[in-house]
Length: 121
Image 1: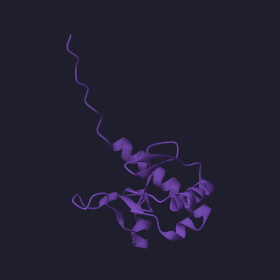
Image 2: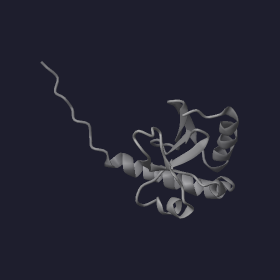
Image 3: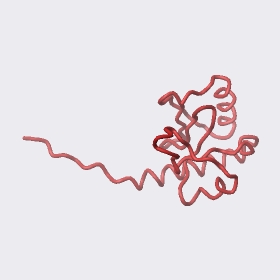
Image 4: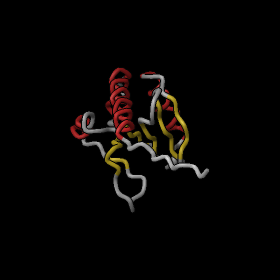
């Protein structure tokens, strides 16, 4: 999941021009946040946003690839590559960030609650 310094610096400026995005390094890549759960991943100098059934259509229309962290596991459908034309316009990028952040919240709310194990007394 390496991300080159040059790619990240340019991408970071584009993201910050669209929305107040925060980030955290993870597994050699970068996780992106906008006030909630992770909505995007930067991996191998590519940007991927989280999608769900409500937000995936524009990615399909653009022919966006799914993120593949490990070829042995295969593609991960809930992350799609952000088309380059989106990065060219801060307003468009902001709308795609909003949609990805909303998808992240919806997907996070669908997770099964962790089962609490009773403590031994």
